[in-house]
Length: 217
Image (cartoon, one colour):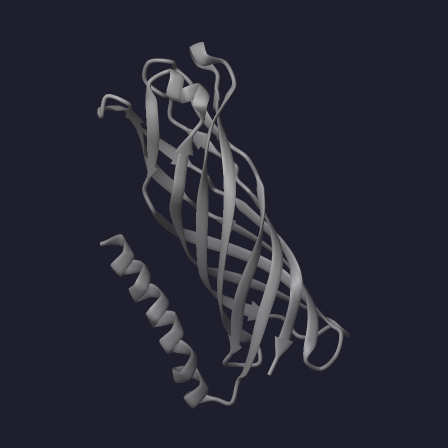
């Protein structure tokens, strides 16, 4: 069901570009960024050991596109995958490595671009993010304690954005960008016996700080 919703959102975003192009002669820009994904993670307390989850930062490559359907307004679609380690913190376990997962982030945002100031053009964006989780694994330390794995649900939430394009030529610009995404997921901790130890509420709420280049057609 979640995958169907994700596909519907992405299809709607893709369909939006030619629709806007028919309405007005716009400009398409392709973007590539290196992004630091910095979770501000909190979780509910794990039943039993009384610990919480802490999630580390990661660096990832992002590919995206912006369609300017008006001199000031545009739509951006971006996608990146980042690998994160997580720890168990506090309680009777103390602090120990707990595992890892891959986070796939898709963001669709409506942007307002301010008038150009020399070679500088700042913008603000507001949109929707989808967070998908895969390759979830637990550490050997947890396996020895009877935990066989974790399962993290996908998440939808708002995305807030501020950025700056610095023109190098008429078509090429350096891009600096910061986004905050709301990511809240239910996380199952699965026991080796097949049962479930607990279902946590995990709030990742990562900042995405990126720098890259864009090429306009």
